[in-house]
Image (cartoon, rainbow, N blue to C red; front, side, top):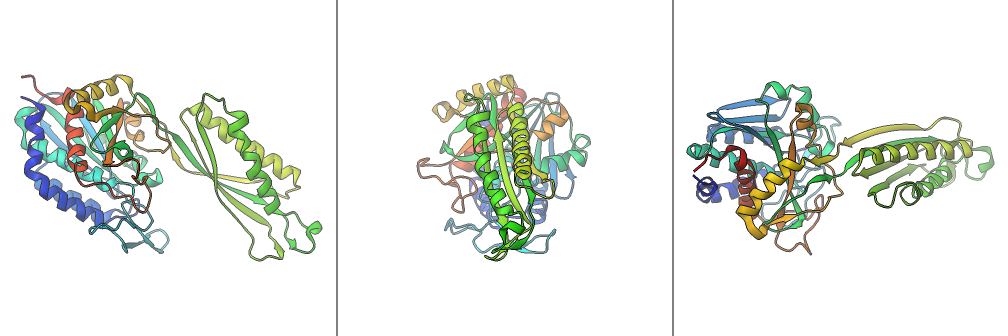
Length: 409
């Protein structure tokens, strides 16, 4: 009994999987509003014939394949799209697709420009192959279709809606992400920190409004904000040790309505990244200290306000699990199994295994033949090569699970 006996089933489903991928690509949906996506996944799981299918929260799903005694392996696929317009030019693109946000009532473009549709299809393909080849493995395989990764809310939503009661506790939790930086058709593993810890911060600073011709009668929050932006740039260069990697970005600065009016407030939006919890905490301490000090120096009439959101945990791969998966990849994929460097993006993947006390590993899946010209995730041009990406994504899941599930010859 070999992995190849399971993987070979993918040959019989390739055409259908490619067409289904295009359907998912055309129906991207906003985070926690993935109703059509979830319904289509449910339909496919019913067709495959999973042993148990449990909804978790509004759009999350847990699919369980039980196949006798043995370990429990869980694999996650995120399912949400991004609020942006696609410009890939593919004949199956979601260009022009919009969705009314249930929270705001505003219609916005939506696209699968992060590759979550690849993740959906990879997990569906693996589930179908495992269901068709039950004689080749033993244990339990759990597919976790998770909403709202893009707003760092989906994994926590599944935890809050008691995912622990909707699935057997896994021995290992697995995940993957299609990327342009990994060679096309390859899989990339890494011990320890892979995706950075991240947070966004909304900072409101206060001034005193006045006529633009009478600045002495006011406190200008635009000048104050400019000082803050400049001073924040010293955090990385002067407060973070050179051996550490960290990012502080001011992505938005909004204030005022007219050229001759000094406004009474300004709003800054910041984003931080770090591969170490202590470094992340030090970034936030420094930001708040600097902002408060600049406000005091500028005679701000009110204390600044800080609101943290889109907070992502560190994705810190378990050494033993990663070594096991990497060895399986090396054996099956050969030169298409590579080692990755840390990725300065972030994931909420680890929230569920951390809540369950389960070790995990997360790997990269190459999505483009030419890494030199591949667009980054969240680019309007991000649309991975259909093949070999879909096949390799499903194969990677089966191969990664095999050390726990594969029967002895």
